[in-house]
Image (tube, rainbow, N blue to C red; front, side, top):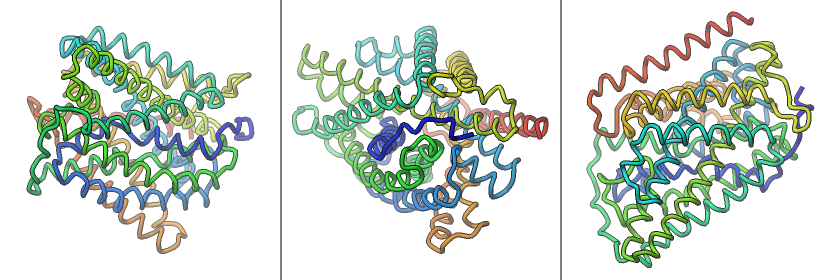
Length: 439
């Protein structure tokens, strides 16, 4: 069935796509909370999680190539039920993660226009932005990767330009502050480390999901990983350092740290600064949308491939005749994304809603990764791959446990943790019922 899909992505497209998908500038917020030693935590995350992840993904992509990535790997190793539940958790992780886009874009526009917290906490405004960006994601996904890759590539270059400007800002701004002191190791430091290690450095499996739409197949996917990993580490370390030159660790905005840094750095330049901040933030909005578009495209392939395997209704396998994209899977993903976004905006405050959604997505994501790291331990694999799998599994398990600890003040930490647990339990309970109904 994968021969019905178009091979639209080359090696250069894949490298830019990895940078676009993995580099989330909101991750600079938790990293900046770590203070002056953030670089050590970043390097530890790369060594203990991202490099092991790269080794495992390269192995699995070569050993079990095929559209669907983690779904196909889990299904081949453990059977239909495990494959479906991995796809189910990954799909819902993407839904929850993408539902944050409206808050991120709405908040960024607030910084750009100077409307401040009044606009960023306006629920009607955030719901409208969420609806607009979700419709745009669906339209671009239906247009197909052949068309969308140009948007993604331009956004990747935009991201690199924005990061370069961010890194250079301390050289030209008078708002530079003293770098923070080294903070002692604490539970919060460990929590933040697992957040930046897993949330910020994960995503190498995303393009493996689209392997049958890559011109060079599994070979290009594995080569692009080797090129992208060191670039991503450098961006994160230098970007976090720059944020900390303008904002104290405890004051960093956990949703829009880069927009916050731009607004502070350029404030002394008056009206010119306002124009510059607006332009910079709009570039970041374009980048956020394109990153979400790339992730959205990967997400829609999960129900498509599960439909090919008769684990969900074949309705999800319908391809748009001209673009050869799974139009029904895209419609379902868009509806779910907006519903999740609207519910979060309606029932919780901005920062708390963002963190609850983000951490719920994290648990769903960790479940997928735990299964993925177990596969090389239960199937034939070289010693290096097994060692990498153990390291990745340990970091992911720690992340899963510590996800229930809030990194911002919340009215009730217990309610916060229970909300995450209930959502995860319901998602997996429904998923188990669905797969049993169609097996």
